[in-house]
Length: 121
Length: 252
Picture 1 (cartoon, chains in turn brown, red):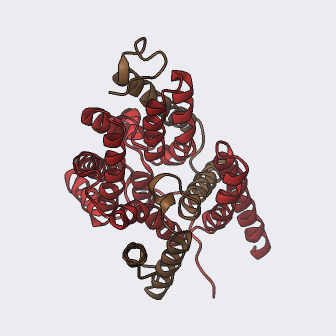
Picture 2: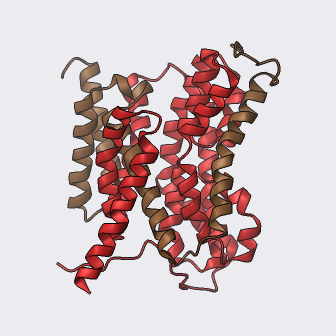
């Protein structure tokens, strides 16, 4: 195991580190829950928080599609954006059907990425 | 064209109040299987392969999916452990990568608050939250009586978590055996799904926030990969919220 992390022994190896990483995530979950107990779910503050959450997720999704990190970064940007655009066309043609958009878009990307791999594109 | 904009706030109205919790649990599980579960298997396959290539244990892979239950944070965890970075920087990176859970839980937990039984399980419910389960309950909650939201959410989340573990374990085992175009498609499918779920929303304030956020997200990422996302959420969310209020006042 590549437990070369500084202080790994102190923290009980990979399991100790995982416990810390889990806690680092749970802090946000717990904090949101504690604050949620104090805001009025019918009020303007709650509506604003919902908008912020959606905006943040939209930003994350757009970032992943336009400039991904990791494995997706090796695919062609034009393929990802083109496939998403194709998915959106299907989505609106099918009166906003989420499944058609997702499966159509993913299939389009699969074909494009395969064609590149096979040297057709 | 005049549309009926729905409020992003769930009204606790009742559609079939006699429905049994076990039945609603099954409905939640079925809704999760309809599409999200497959995409979770797909994206977690990528994660399982990553852990395998990092030379870490399969049990660590599975436990990190259950414990962290948020892909960006999981990836940060693995990458920092492999890098051999200081513990504090790993913790900070994971926390930053999963910061979205704060506004998400803030927006989700009020859906459970009116139900005393659900509220007593709140820390379990929030631990089960991922973008997929958040989207699932946010879409369904307005049409569910408050006491049936927890069973629906539990059915939905249990299915998603099972899918996550299947994907993680499967990806660990078949790491490297899939052609690149298949694994890349599996990873891209989930963000695409979110794009369409969001585009299908009916709340005007949320739609404006989503559109502005989609533009600002990549731009802000170029400015600051660490802080771009929270600022994108704050600014685009506020724009959506304010624009909706202004439009409402104008039409009133």
